[in-house]
Image 1 (cartoon, rainbow, N blue to C red):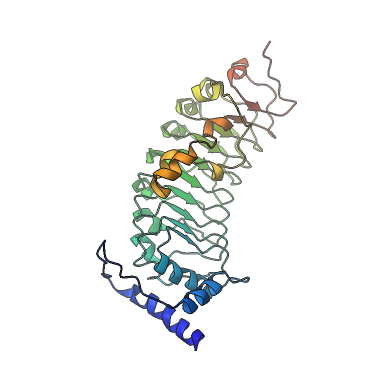
Image 2 (tube, rainbow, N blue to C red):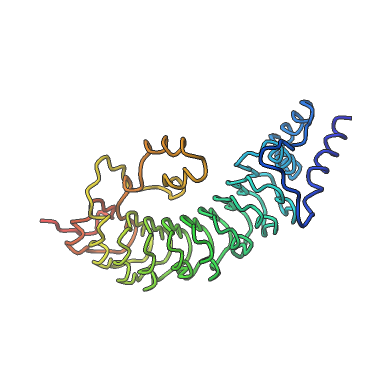
Length: 332
């Protein structure tokens, strides 16, 4: 009987998704549906199943509709496709985790998540950048590594708040210059793609703090990279470089001495910013975040596993350079 009631409850929770104008509760009123403890326990059991499935995903969504948690975690649940209406009425969600599934498209109702700040779609089957994300003007972080994406649409410039995009392990052959108009973009991870040239448009990435092109086929870097004055972390390891533009050595954040330096950052996924924490988690969390390492703690250049024989002496002024032992840098 409980299983039958539960199935009906989940159906009821999702049945209203198809309404074009879902009802909105008054801010002071508590209109959340009331369920028995047994029903909630069964939902939790299905959501936390040892072998997650699409049923687990539906149960987790149902629970989130009740609890209104800002995080909706649907990672690793063998999801191939989600109903188009599934996220209607879930405007409270700020972090959506859909990684490690088998998704190739996103439902249109994601566009209704107007408070969404972070989305994880890594380890899926996307062959194109999901166009539905372009309507989420408040989106700050996109994690889309290990898919089959090969380009970024020009309309990405609509995401005025975009701070980080992780698109490593995809099918990019050209540097995504379409991001040059995202003036808040701080972290760009393009590692493990097939990019050979960093073009002149790199000079337009005014806010960029971290850039990773590790594991590509980069052989040429425009001198315009010298205009990216906020660049603090630059990973060019495992490429086809034979030389490095001396303009990089003049970048002020790379020359700055850093107390308590931690070495080069392993992944941009772990880097965060106080203003983002405050926006997503609130003021108290932002205060606690002050004790964590800042991006500058990992400043530097990583040029391991290239074919660079010699660096200009100007690179002696860079605070941290990670290079092959065969690469000559004479600082005498």
